[in-house]
Length: 393
Image (cartoon, rainbow, N blue to C red; front, side, top):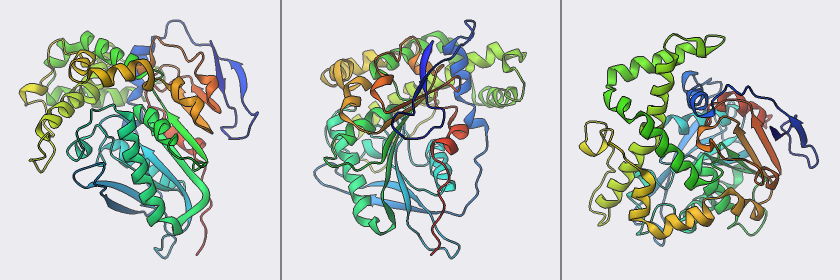
């Protein structure tokens, strides 16, 4: 298998090499990739620095009907003063909220390296759904306009703390597709680089992969309760201590449980919550987004639930556009400069689809041997974002 791999993780033209990486034919991308996705969740965040985390309130009447909040972790000196530093704008994965582990992890990892970090709630999250106008989820024109407005708000209000020409954009999972869409809206060269971590090659294809995964384990999912889920989670994390975690006695069970967790708790359940929130907020009469758990009848591991069919039925035009145009990296990549893609060869959301014809559209393409869907994040971050020497003020 041929992949591009940048040996220095740098950003100099012409530093990309074509090498051959060999993987065992016995490795199943869906199984091991799903399992390895949870590696980073089993690793405590290494907090090295004090940080000032601001909650920023944003409102623009042409885009939303209520205020949206997002978070900024700002670099301080020893006196507790905000100093000039590079800044990274983060577009998280589908449904991600500011209080989620993903958001906290990103703020900490980047801030530990000496970067200002700003993270937005994903446009499919309850925070944004309850504030949005009447446009369908997946309308990248509207969603990216909202992200652009928030970035410009930060640039205007925090300009004195941002090092010139040191602004980066980080898109995670489906947030990578959205990051590319919003990058096209900046006429001048704004971002030093645009980093996509674990992006779906084709968003509609990945949704189909999740649907198939859930269909494989929906019976197991319905047998899981809170106690068994907790025990399985602890067992999964413990198994990583083994030199070969596939030798763990309960590995076959653990691998199926991770499929259930990824497909249901991370995607299907959140997709259902989004649709329920859209219905609840059609009149903007409620104050708080719905955030139910498995005790709600609509969120109790539905039998034969299919996100693609639900999406096509509710938003046919938007889904057709995602499937045929805007959901594909190959559509956006030629329109954006300085793009770096970081992925794992066994990322389950891209299982069965090739990077051929896509990887060479990016400035740099880094394919790690393993790590699943974003499970490599703690290990790779210091290499993607090397420590920045803080300015003494």
